[in-house]
Length: 120
Image 1 (cartoon, rainbow, N blue to C red):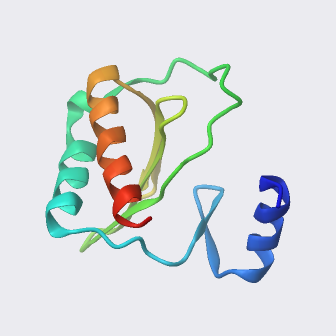
Image 2 (cartoon, rainbow, N blue to C red):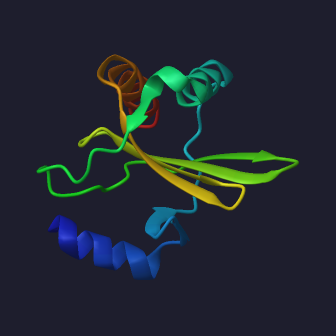
């Protein structure tokens, strides 16, 4: 099945939600405590971010994952696009679009690849 047709199929036949204007499956991807902590530390690091420099020539921002954290202040989301090394952070009434620094961005990509490998 073509990816485009699969996307339309999934939009109407799977449980999904909208975060930051993008659709994601409702089913959580399981991760070990160690991997979850590593992803959280990578996303919380100020070294990961640099100012957004505008659209890339890779076909546009398209987040690969929706990472979610819950706290007393509310729900926070990180929506990384590892193809164009961008991320949107949403929470506390704010949305921030940033580019990822190369080395920390590559480290985050490695963690996401581990998450994919763990979940087939």
